Image: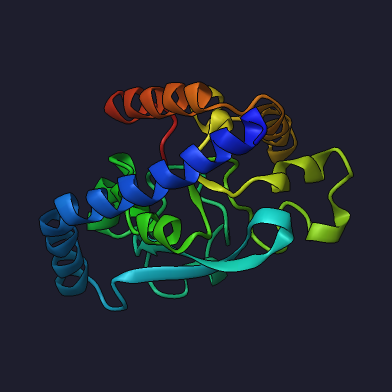
Length: 198
């Protein structure tokens, strides 16, 4: 078995066990968040959206709902350019600031659609449809998308997608378990210091 295959096996094992343990440990917090969302605004607890995964496979990503119903058809559409966006609910602002809205993606990791670390999964139509990515850009789809990734810890949402994709490809080309752990640690740091989080 090649070194990369061994790394990928360890990565999947860590993803599954880490996410499963995480859901169990965080279940009281997940329950409190769910109740708070339900009683504070109209709509479902979870936000479900189709995204592009490994090799362009379409899957449903899960998040805690942080915006009003129909937010994508109002204001800046799919874009959230500031934490003062009036489409974000009161509890949603807190969840986004602490990145707690991403926690349901642990279920995506358990299912095997996502990894803890990897390129963030884009929308089906933004920044491009799958067939419109260049051959180099498509390299980012050779690995499962992640809850966090190299682009998130280096530039987050402060640069255009094309520049984030360059970092995504860099991650895929240089993947290792050590790099994953480094990204996880940097993610924790960015959350604690609330760096570029909307």
